[in-house]
Length: 62
Length: 152
Image (cartoon, rainbow over all chains, first blue to last red; front, side):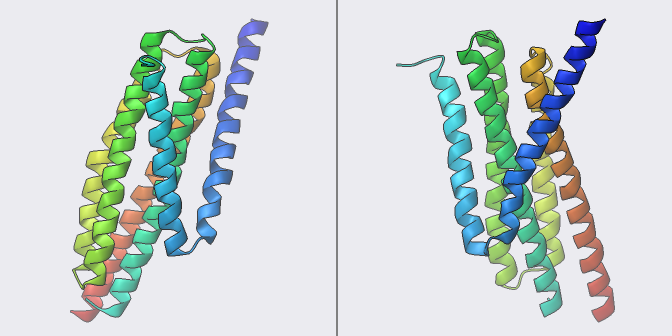
């Protein structure tokens, strides 16, 4: 079915885009000093934690 | 421990740090995509909350592993057995990260195609990173054990 085929193509495109975007961002760490990497990881931990907390907040905005 | 062992172990730990950064990026991206999809009304509350909790558990696992990396750095710098530290990190990785990543994969099977495609990409990236970790640990163990044999 055409819709099914287009759906599959779209699914693959989204997957590839996600992997490429993630890899481009992750690649930047290779050029960092050890100290910069520690700071960057702390920032990533906070960003990821904030995103999860924002998710919980969407269910309980009080 | 030889100076060479120490250098190899510290290189392994640095590479583990770099791979962990990727794990955090992918986890954050999944959480953001999940939140955006829910805000747009594309997924029901139960699906959003289940995925969010799975990401939460996964990130706690990555955080625990990162704490292990910090401890391993200190131990190696203080002269602890390098091979032993790599073994500890490997065990910690399997227990904290791999199990939570598998739970995360299982939690996103009910997502609509668009979001599943996006999240599926990051899940694939997480699985690739896990494979890279396995290669990293295996290389380190072979390398450090070889070193022990040379100096035995």
